[in-house]
Length: 265
Image (cartoon, rainbow, N blue to C red; front, side):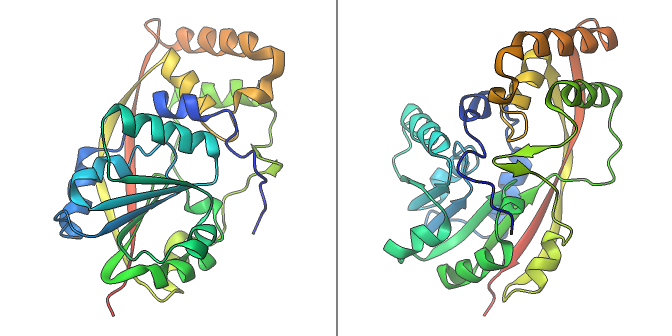
């Protein structure tokens, strides 16, 4: 497993909480029904970010625990949960092994949304198997589509980003390459039972500001990598996008996959 260091998402949390697309209501309904959520038990959100997914389940559990290795993300989660007056959450800065050392909570439901690829996946599933209640499980959520064809505006964004950030996708202390073994293969090799579900696509509307803000919310697009070239980058990207659409409004169809790791025994 690659070691990305402690600065993987440093400086991204402010943009993450304001510009990352929200998860669809269809996804929330599907998970609520699949796991028969009724207000009892505990939920764990691993790699919780700003809590944007776990907070959607606040009414369906006695306690929700959010874990993230980036302290700025945990600070955002704490801020947001206070703002919307959700009181049954606990936010923890660290990974699942660090949490387990001082806690023996059993979880009915675990989510890992757009974060599993950063983890030592076999080890995480091994640890979670001891933490998940019988009849419960893990929902591993992502919209990674390796064969997806980029829209013209997305291709333009990619080209401008490469111009200013370089061809290699930086990730913390090193560069990123997507795992060659799929999530479903990792689950199939674990003690959990695998199920796969595809959520219906939904349309995401992007503006110039949200495209830039979403880019700054990513590990490879962190603003700190630009140094004093922030204004030049933003000017270049806006000019290129406005050449495609003079109103600066763009659309994307979002596909969401859910890989379930179920503890049926």
